[in-house]
Each structure stands twice: as C-alpha cells, then as structure tokens.
Image (tube, rainbow, N blue to C red; front, top):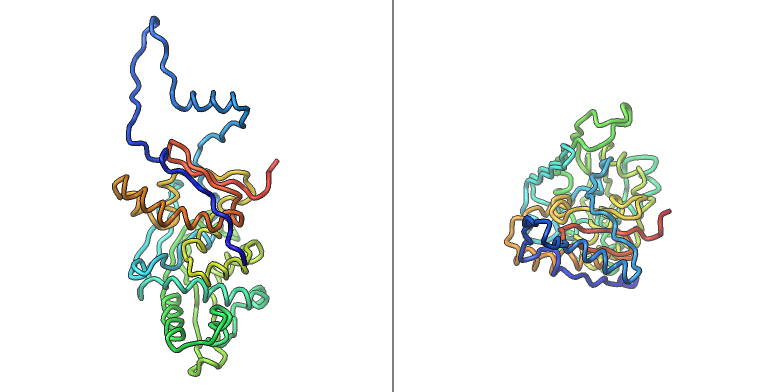
Amino acid sequence: MPRPSSVQTSTSDVYPDTVTHQRETSLTLPQMRTSEEINKQIRESLRLPAKPEAQPTVPIEGHVCEFPLWAFSKRRSTLTHLRINYEDGTYFQLEALRGMPSVLSPGYLDTLWYYGQKDLFSQKCVEMSAYRLLSYLHQGPVHGEQYRGFVRDMKRHFALQIETDRFIDPVTHGRTHTAYFRVLDGMELARNGKGESRFYFNDIFLRSLRSGYLRQLDLDFCLFLDRKVEPLARFLYAHVAKRLGEKSVYVRSVDGFLSDIGMEYLAQFPVKRRTERLKRVVFPALDLITGQACSRYDLDDRGNIFFYSLEPRF
C-alpha cells in the first residue's frame, strides 16, 4: 500500500514567543489592529475563504477508538496508569497492571478484527493460531521471539482495566452509567503456537467496537501502519476519523488534543522542547494518516488544530 502523502505544517505560529499586550487608546489616536484582523484582511484581498472560527469542540459520544490502549513508544510501555479528563466532566481511566501493550500490539488486535470481523458481529470469540496471526501480520516466517512477544502483549491486553463514563447507555440513551470493562474477557492459548487459540472479547468493548468502527475503518490501512510499526499513527487514524465524523472540520486546542490522545505530559514541557517533540513525533504521525482520516490539518496562531473532512460537507 503506498504511503499517504505528507502535509507540511508550520509550527512557527503555534507557540509565539511574544504576546501582544492591549493598551488603551484615546479618540485622537488610531486604533491598533490585531494580527487576526490583519490576517483576515489579507485573506479577503487574496479572495481566500475565511478560516473557520476556532471553537474547540467536545465529542458527544464516547468510543473505544478514542482511548489509547497501547504504548506509542517502548518507553511508554512501562506505564501502569493513565487518566484523561474531558472538558465536559467525563473521564477515561486505564489501569495496566502488567504494563501497556507494546508498539507491536495494535497489529495483533487488527489481525484478529480483520480476519475475524464476520465472527465478531455474531459472537464474541475469534479462533486463530498464534502462528497464523503472526504470519498474516509480519508476512513471513514466524520466529520464537515474535511468538513470545505476542503472548506477552496479549496477557497485557487481558490485564487492562478500563473505567469511563463517556459511553451513551443503550437503555437510557444518556450518560447515566460508568462502565468498567476489559478488552478481553479471556483467552485460551494453545500450548503449541500452531494450534487454534481462542480470544474472547469483552461485551462492552465489543458493543462499542461494532458501532460503526469495524465498517468505517480501512483495516488494510490499519495493517499497513501496523507492519510499519507506527502505533501512534494507527491510533490517530481511528481517533481523528471518529472525532471528525460527519463534520466538515473538527477543531481542538493543541493542548486538549494532546490530552485526548494520552500525551498530556507534552503540554508540561517548556515551549521549545514541546514544539520539538510535536515536530518529531506527533506531526509525522498525522502526516501518515492525511488522506485517510482527514484531507489535511492546519494550525493557527491561537494554539488550535483543525482537521478537515475527506469530502466536502454541505
């Protein structure tokens, strides 16, 4: 599968080094124009469409694709606790008793979902040998180290404990309950890696997974990212697609976006270090999903990030 085209973004205006202070003006002095007004006038003179108003949005309905369920780097695989607080008062909390599943783990889940999606719409169990799963994912012979890594990560997925009040309850049709669940309810791993193993997904997790997630995502593209070992891009693909939904543009503050994807710690970095990390880690991942989850993304000088839909919305 060809690599999605990159979008070159400029971060020079995201975190300005100086702040323009307002000052009082009298009737005899000309009124100072803001940079926003100047930029607006320039866009009008060039006959460019006006930029959307930056009014950061908060999603209405929670979904498992919003939540980071694996590590984005080897260092973060030692994480055992993660909590995300949203502006609307809801939250997501993850307890990873064995540590976070590794950067290879999204490929294991995607392979089970890709080849078992027909079964998952009628039942909660997928049967597949570990060696067949690994051969699908790595597209080659299976080595003992790959098998041991697979068993370790599936144990970590099984140990994850998730708590959130973001889901819309199917009975009350409101946020009236707090859900406590896992990714997997159980596993039966064959002693021989070539034997059929059974993976039982949790009912609450599966209910969210079935609500459009499996049908809307291009699982071939997911596996493409998995094989390139791009765990952050793989997560952002589903996350941005879900947040954008049917909107023509999805707007979020950069700090809010970092919090949403479990990288709130970047917001605590000094400006120079944060900008460097965004340019080295986050923006390349967004470039990979441009053309798949969104048509493009932009940043403004007020610290907001804009995601634009793949097709025009009228």
